[in-house]
Length: 288
Image (tube, rainbow, N blue to C red; front, side, top):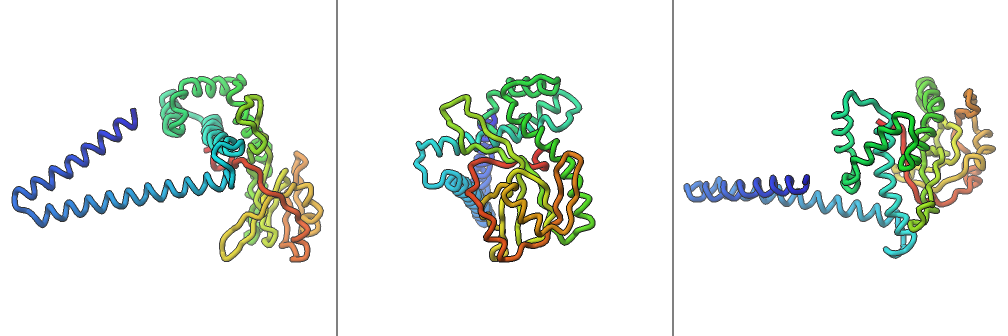
């Protein structure tokens, strides 16, 4: 229905534009008609360029996820499943993490936030979301509940990072996020489920406020841009992190915030990274 209305509006605008040019031409306002035609042509050209840019960016993202795999390969199937899970999970998590003042407000929010591919199931999805608010555990929201539970466990670390950042303005802040791993999923197996881990980005060359997480995404600044080098398990890097820790804040849940200095060049090769598995991140900002 949204596509139909959009096409009707587009048709009406094009018709009015053409009628306007014709009316100006018939009345002898040739310069004005030419100006209107030129303006309309420029608008169409700009819109086409924006659309092409969006399509190219989306194609690059798909290529980066899929790598060199054939379109019908199992990996390509996991890429598609990952993209759909990412879009749906972020909406589910955001819906469950906020308060709505009325049913109409909740319905409107979900309609606007839900990707077009899922709108046909919006009624069923909203029933499951409201059931989850009442304490039930619909199977369709298992992944979203796991992400929310992880964010709740990370909240004390997030709050501590906020406090430490005020007294350590020269330190980068490694915000913990939920990393949903889909690399192992079999698209043809309905029992195949993603894994959820806590993750944070870390540039070893920068002094950093670094929380205890399960995996670290190693990044480095190259020619003024941040480049991802791979991942490492926090446990595997803990010894090196501790050697470069100026001080540490221990939290009640057994995790810690490490206030680190930059690693020496000789120590950085000791961090053996592995390729980041296929998946997606859900950060605190995406819950709102």
